[in-house]
Amino acid sequence: MNLYLRYFDREILVHNVDDAIDFLASIDEIGMNPMLEEDIREYAASDVYYPKRYKIRPRVYFIIIKTEAATMLDFKEKRALHSVSPANDREKIVSPVIAHLNEELPGWYEGVIDFKRVLQVPGTGKFQYRDTHFVAQCKAVSGMDCYNRIVEHLRQRVDSRSQFPSAKGKNFKFRYLGQCK
Image (cartoon, rainbow, N blue to C red; front, side, top):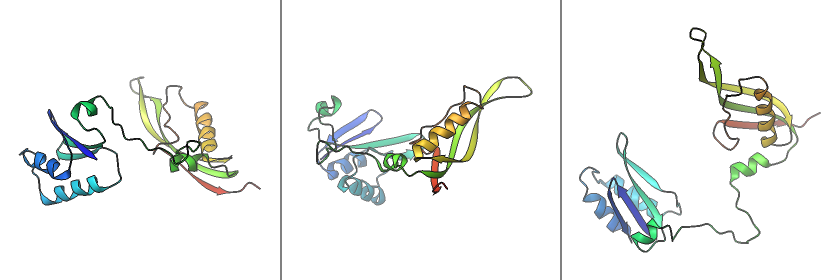
C-alpha cells in the first residue's frame, strides 16, 4: 500500500509511512509532532481507504490518500483504484443505512425530516429558504416508505421551490413505533 500526500502544490507518492512522515516534517508550516505522527501511522495501518485530511490552521489542510498506484503517473490517471469486491459476484454490497431504510416491517413509524422551506419575508415580499424541522407519525411498510409519505405530504403543502434532503442523509431519521392494529 502506497500513500499519496499533498499540501498545496507540494505532493509526493511514498511507499511507506516513514517516508510520508519525513516529507511532512520537511514542511515547516505543518509542525510535525508525536501525536500527528502516531495518527498518521494508525491511519496507514488501518483498513480505512477513505482519504484523510489534517487541519493545519483555518481553511488550510494537507491530505493523505491510500493507493495501489506504483507511480505518480498511475495515481494521477487513476489506474490503481482500490475497489472492494464482493466475495460472490451475485452479492451486492449495501451500506447498513440503506439496508435498514429498505427493511420491510409494516406498522407505525415516526419520521423526522429537516428541510429547506421557501417562505415569504413579510416586510419585503421577497422569498428566502428557512431550515424547517418536521415530525410525523404514519403507517408505512419501511423507513423509505415513511420518507416518501412525509415528502409527498409536504410537497402538497409548501412552496414547490422547497428542498427536501435525501432519505439516506443525516437530515432524515425514523423509528419504528409498532405494528398496526
